[in-house]
Image (cartoon, rainbow, N blue to C red; front, side, top):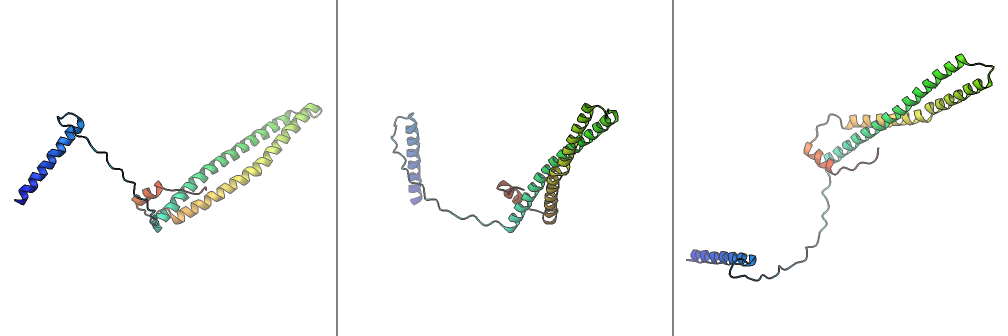
Length: 178
C-alpha cells in the first residue's frame, strides 16, 4: 500500500509540474503565476594553492625554453651573418672598383687622385666596420647560440617525455628572453 501511495503522489507531482509548465507558457487554461527564483549570494572564493609542479614538468619547461632560446639565437645569428656577408660583399666591390680606378688613374690629374682617395676612405671605413662591431656582435651571438645548443643537447636531447605533460606545460609556458 505504501508503494501505491508513493506512485499516486509522484503522479500528482508530475501532473502539477506539467500543468505549471503549460501554464507558464500561457497555452493552458490555468495559467499559474510563478514566484521569482530566490537569488542567493555566491559562495566565497577560497584560494587553493596550485599543486607544485612536478620535477619532470619543471625539466620539460626548462627544455622547451632552451629550445625557444636556440631558435631565437639562431635567427639572430642568421641575421648577423647576413649583415657580415653583405659588408664583405660591399668591401669586395669597393676593392675591385679601387683596382679599376688605380689602373686607369692619371696621377697628374688632381680630381682623379681626389676621387681615388675618397673611394679609399670609404673602403677603409667599411673595413673598420666589418672587422669591428659587426664581427664582435656576430661572435657574441654565435657564442651564446653554441652555449644554448650545448646545454640543450646535454640536458634535453633524446630524452623520452610524456606527451600529455609536454602539451600541458606548453599551454602555460613563459620563458625569459634568450
